[in-house]
Length: 171
Image (tube, rainbow, N blue to C red; front, side):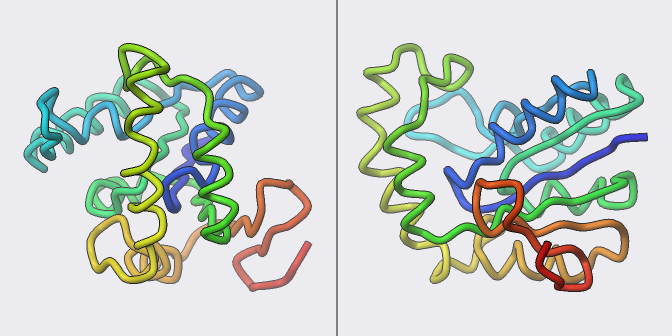
């Protein structure tokens, strides 16, 4: 059974990897951005209980799945359901490069132009990854990874041959 959680900094490649896994394994994919935010400007987090209810409905509906995002508060509620976790632990510079080259995400933005208008804010968010102390921070992701006792992988780059397994060995 495939029940995979993918997390990491913004623009680390979570969505790309999740889509690839979902396509190759023919399993359901959930981008947590779609259930973590209220449809408002300025953005505001959806109440945690509502997001958790939506996640539980998703995993109940789908036998196999891949869920990706940067929200450890949401992942903690389904950690015991996961067969594997993947930490996209890329350098800040690589995440910024990925953000600048990101294709249009129509499920998040009405137009590519609207997405690009948000790029400067996204890059500042990416740069703060190691300083933040929220549920989307490096510290929260590292703690979640270390606390998980099951199958886990840490990607250090978007290339598949640059990773560490749960024993910390490079492959």
